[in-house]
Image (cartoon, rainbow, N blue to C red; front, side):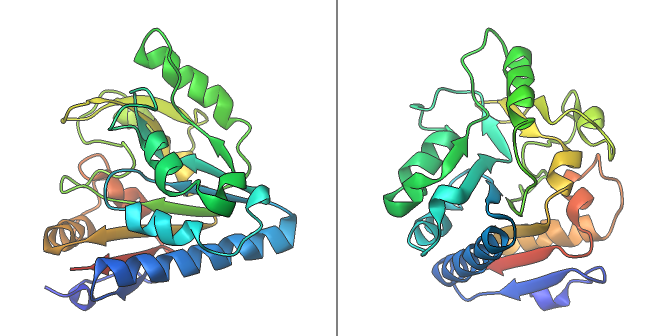
Length: 237
């Protein structure tokens, strides 16, 4: 299957690259341009990214882009509820690979807090995100189960987190993998981003995306909530 074989909704565009390196380079250039345009237009720019292993090369390329980083706010679409020093921390990933060199001047809003429990951590993150400016660029990933951010199928709170008009910005979520405790931005907050990008790699993700495009049950595959006009899909084998 090729990405050109997918029946994409009108207004959704797809970009295919021969390797992860080429995808990361192109995505970094695109995002830097979007952030630069936002700074020119309104003085600041806000970027929300996803964690995991896949975005590392993208982070490294983005950190090298010439940008007024002091006027950029960065946050995470989701976070594992582990300390920043933990190997699975998305915040730790951002600090190691993106907030480097000139990019270290960016303001980073972390979702993690050492609260008594996951619910309290989500409530604290929700309050913090009230200070988040309008999201200019959002980078999402996708799991083989159709989850995006930490909006996992069958997780408690999923129905509430997927509300189109929900007012809560951050929800506690349980993943089927360890560490299973997560914090995630709500569908409503993520969907408010001006520019939305889905970055995936590998044939299995292409197959998952094909299944997602073939149905409309958002709870079954939460990524379906974002397969809407203006979405850009980046893919490589």
